[in-house]
Length: 538
Image 1 (cartoon, rainbow, N blue to C red):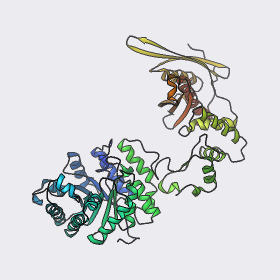
Image 2 (cartoon, helix red, strand yellow; image 1 turned 120 degrees about the vertical axis):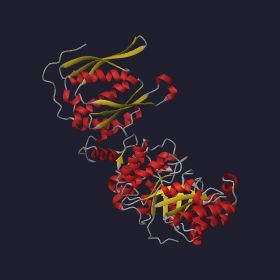
Image 3 (cartoon, helix red, strand yellow; image 1 turned 60 degrees about the vertical axis):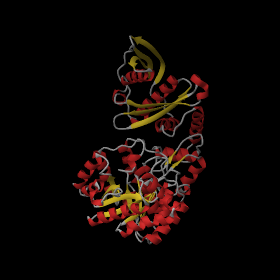
Image 4 (tube, rainbow, N blue to C red; image 1 turned 90 degrees about the horizontal axis):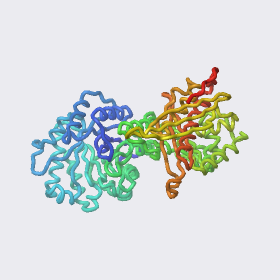
């Protein structure tokens, strides 16, 4: 068994196993960018792909040869030789050498079911395939990692044969034997027992490679480490086939911070959230908010009693400091909120407020009532800021929408939406009209056209960049209440607003008004009223 203070090696297979996940696809340029980021982070091994499977991976290895990797060893991935072929005549094995990586990882069969029914060979020939390939790669100067595919299912089927395959790889010179829970269906107790037997009998460092098919990918990897595995394979964000691989964004902080084993430096771990987001961005996938450690919800608090406790002693409801992985604490607002939620959230938003602020009671009442009506402030901090600002500062609206009209007309085969608005700023009124692709787009145009006459510098840069609608009570059919989220931007900052109404146009319009009020009252507090009287337009 490995010593409990020995280093745990991190082996990343995002560029190969991760790309087998649904919706994940990386170009060669993407893979190089990711590999460079992994190297910078301190990953020990980066599996670049299978040079025998496609031109993209061949090109990746050609580019990887020309780079100076500071922390990581690049690994090419492939299979043992085919049955009945001399290893030096197997084209796939030769491509592994041609990749010129310092590390070669090969997989071979452990489970007799696969030996006899999938690759259709004998148990003895399978063992020769493993040993011949490892020995040949070692003879050619490679650091060899042997991935024992279906290690745990194979062991449960025939322990003696499974061990025989692993011992053959070790005796042929493999530097690490990695036990793979390829189907992702094993339990931590099984992982530990089989890993312990391998460590006792194989005579070679043991690694672990798990999948998350029953939700235990990370737990199984940590279980193997607890009994002596010294290397863990996984992917960033758990990307991978079916339900994914063991997630390194959970493994790394758990190993380094919870198990206190040498792994990745604490300095690098402080950028774990950035790394997780970077990989999601390159993969063109939404970052999972509920992902442990690195998700935006990982340190988010909503219940009033919880927030009250966190306000007093942060670790009373947090297993770790969020900053240690580059995350941050978030206080959520809802009808479950208490006074502490408001105080901490308001302080987070920049308001000078504490438990003695007299307006707290009214703010809490407003929030609970609006949430009851269908509002949801968790992702709409601009609307929340506006509500708090108006209660504390007792400011009036910078403008008033006194009326609007939306109509549709058909021009040939094209439908055109037109909106008119009547906006008052102080004693002045602007009537404007605008056309758009739909009623919300037209109202947005007409409203901003009116306000630009009064606040040109503040309003002109504002653009609506996202619009989301959610039906809250679908059983009501077309009379259902609708919640609208808007995201607006001035080119450098963005903010989100929310509104709810049984009329989708009213909900959209209120969210638009909030967005523009937020810009005038909080983003640009020095907004000046127009000095010249504005002519009414139609």
